[in-house]
Amino acid sequence: MPITSHTQAVRDAYDELAATYDEDFTESVIGRLQRDALWRRFGGLFERGQKLLDLGCGTGEDALHFAQRGISVHGVDVSPAMIEIAERRTEKEERISLETLSLEGLARAAGGPYDGAFSSFGPINCVGDLPALARDLGALIRPGGTAALCLMKRHCLWETLLYPLTAALHRKEAAAEAWSDRPAEDGDFRAFYQRVREVRRAFAPWFEYVAAPGVGVFVPPSYLEPYAVRHVQITAALSRADRATAHWPGFRTLAENRLVILRRR
Image (cartoon, rainbow, N blue to C red):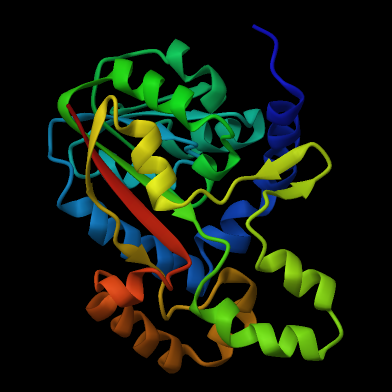
């Protein structure tokens, strides 16, 4: 089946990011803290011996994390360059298999059925048709299985704090874009900032909603990495504050990411 122009644009964008993705995010101070926070959330959802589907596996960081804990993972990613790096990183890990596949074509994923699925930091934001994704995951995940989808949000605590400065620096157009509900566009590549209620509605025919904790309330966004490097102790304190507050109703809405947890009916 031919891929859409949107999927091609997503593929091209992540192919371009692949070579430096681990350096720019995975191994950065903020990237490490954000992923550790996400792994803490994942920890109570999946068990040794299970078989999981990694949606948008990138360079394989999450797949390795689970495999080292006795969980088998089949990772799919639209970017051949990302998959190539992931293959090199995971070649000695028998519990991991990888496939170049867009989330638009998820129904063709190999190796199902699965005990659950997860996605980290943004792949779901590249999906414009949530009901189709929900249908495909409903067919791939066993009843009782868990889907944990980490969605990047357009608005977060740090954006709220920085918004007046953004406007003051005469970047009113950029500031307005940051607070718009419209998809962000870069050529044909659109990022969709889905709300939790939209995900719940799209997945309702196949999945029961469980929870949507925040990930990254006080830890700053990745573009503030220079600040985090210069102020490691402050950043560590912000990470501890995340642990204490990310599940609170008032605070989780301010997080940079929301982890939507769903259970297959």
